[in-house]
Image 1 (spheres, rainbow, N blue to C red):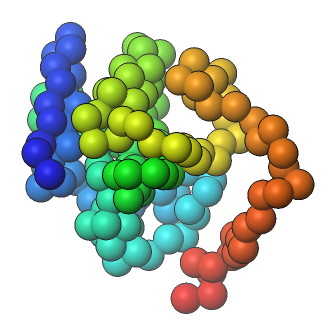
Image 2 (tube, rainbow, N blue to C red):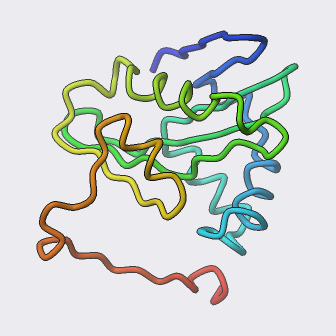
Length: 149
């Protein structure tokens, strides 16, 4: 897939997987995210290798991240989204969402999925809504999966 890069106010969003700082992503997910606490490094690495990734950089340093899991035809799951604390409040999460939602390979999808407990206000701006029929939604969820490894 073609690498996409966007520039704004000294920041860069890139889909180039080779630029990602996997150690930083792992550290954030396992120690700060609240949704992936304790995730092994190898699982983060594998998840990145099997996703369309969006890194945000300042001075060539990764300061934010999101990944999309998709068949690029009907469905996409948006996850592991974060901006490091030192760079929050600058509109970067909005810009990241714009870049993701405008990505050429993610157009015309029937469904997007996102799980969040912290930034509903942001995702609502991009068309995400609460489940209109939660009674038809099912999941198999093991929040302690990384503690069992």
